[in-house]
Image 1 (cartoon, rainbow, N blue to C red):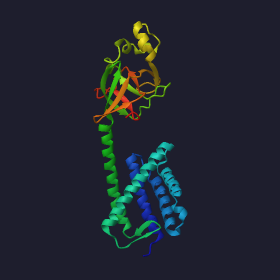
Image 2: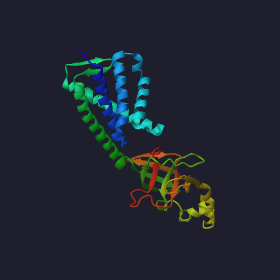
Image 3: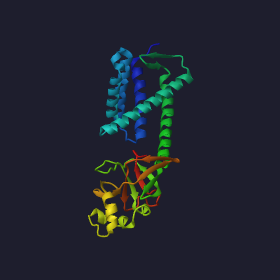
Length: 295
């Protein structure tokens, strides 16, 4: 069977373009047709060279990784390393999905005019498989990501926590906040942000009602016995979220804290409770924020 180089380039150009377009679609990146075309052409030329020359260096995993990084930078122009890694990871995921669909289609269609050379399937079937595979692969990825997103946002991102303090316990509805990286500055322990109103059965109202005064160094409204018992236990936690750029929370270490997820209780050590004086939600869906590392 005679396979022309220009056919190899065209087939891979179309396939690469579809993969990059699907990657951008999933990542919700505004795609530039020209950038996607150039990036796809780079990948297509590489495939053609690999097909023609059979040079082992072109099959090297390091070279292929470098090529993928170049393609991603041309196609999406990521602004930092983190974004580039995310785009590269999803690019590979999309590629593997398309490859799996294409292999399945080859098995189903059973084309006679097909050969494998230098690790590549070539033959007149390819364009048909590309277009059918593109539709199926994109559909599979979009549906999978939508299901995963709904699961995370509606179920996995809400749990309960049980706090024990002063011999008393309370259970709170808690949102898993991936952006909550708050830590107590001295010990480095993670902080769970809890609404003040949810702590009245654990801490004296004299402490909870005067958090602002305590932060300002004014302990005049705190009874003397409470000063001795609670003030040494309090921690001061700076933060730059929750509507403030340079805020400060009062924190306290509970005797015990457990994360409850699907009736499974997991005890967490060294977590700090950060007392937040406002409401975290308008409708009261949850009373605390926990970081992903504690979940």
